[in-house]
Amino acid sequence: MKKAGLRGRAPLTYVTAEPFLGQFGIGGLPGGEKLLRMFCKKEGIQTVTGVAMQERAPGKLRLADGQDLHYAYAMIVPPFTGQDVVAEVPGLADDKGFVPVRDTYQSLAHPEVYPVGVAAAVQVPWTTAILAVCVMDAGANGVMILADRMLPPRKFGVMIPRPQSHLAKLMFEKYFVWKSRHGYVRLP
Image (cartoon, rainbow, N blue to C red; front, side, top):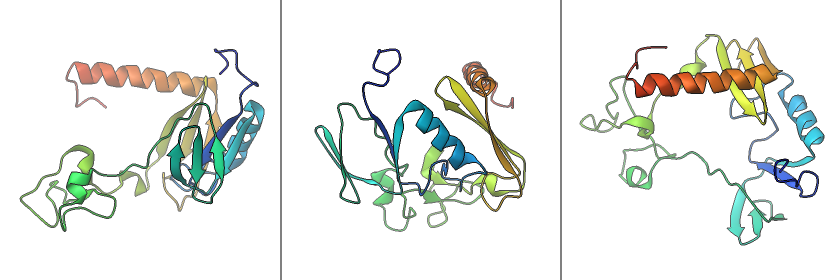
């Protein structure tokens, strides 16, 4: 919007089914909701929380609560679900379309099936009590999250907004692409 010279001339609305800003699917963090409310207020972004999108029509989004949002441009991120072809096999997938697996990546229901990639419903590794570090983009800024564990219950969690966090994320992305292209998959 800023680059196009439209900042302040076009309304922005952020809609999420999450119960509050800063929930991020991980239960939120101390100060996260306040930080995001301040950011949205500073940038003039209206927020709608706790409601999913029901339907899209040309120039209009209908939310599950019956509210209509009119738009000229919309970016929609769908829920993360498994593939229909997997979900349609009786007894293979969970309710989200992912295949529950053993440590060997064999299907629990069909041991002869080995789901690959994101088709596998693996146990979430960040539920263990290890230091969790996450770096997120926030425009030209960035936010670093430090916590004793990524999912609640937590004893400690903090969000640190700094431009250096954005730079750290860009550097990690470049490193990850480099090591992947050159086959150094065992590097951290």
